[in-house]
Image 1: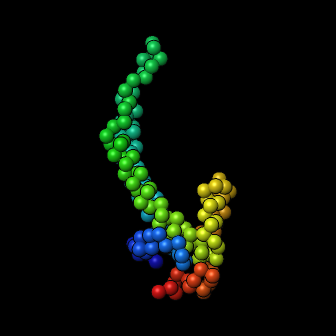
Image 2: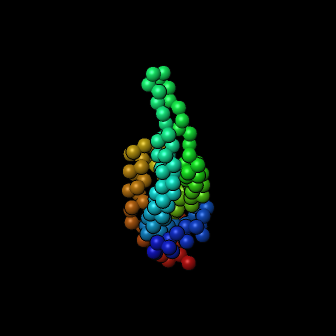
Image 3: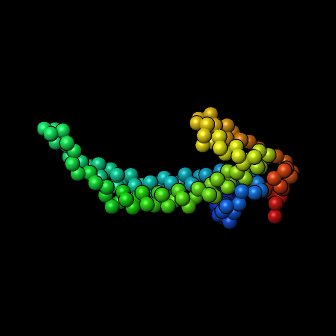
Length: 146
């Protein structure tokens, strides 16, 4: 499965937590999410940098003035929040389906969020594991599913 096909497939299964997702579908999706996040963070970072440049420190009174958020920073925050909210459900769904493809419950996702570094490493290893051949308890393999 290629990049565009993977993105299309994940969006067409936006909130589908059933079934299986191939390694290529999962990792292409993650590349899409990361690249989009980097692009979206550009106006936010530029806006925050320009906001910091307007800070003025009065050393005599030990006070700081200025430094309000620029319009670009606010725009960047809104876009970043919208991006995150729009992609949280399909990201959880494809991660769950990827775990299903390795014959693991989607509940393993909880390790990623609640068990710090070790949980993240374990879940990434599960995602990188090869698919179980043929059908498993979660359905047909992604290559054979129609």
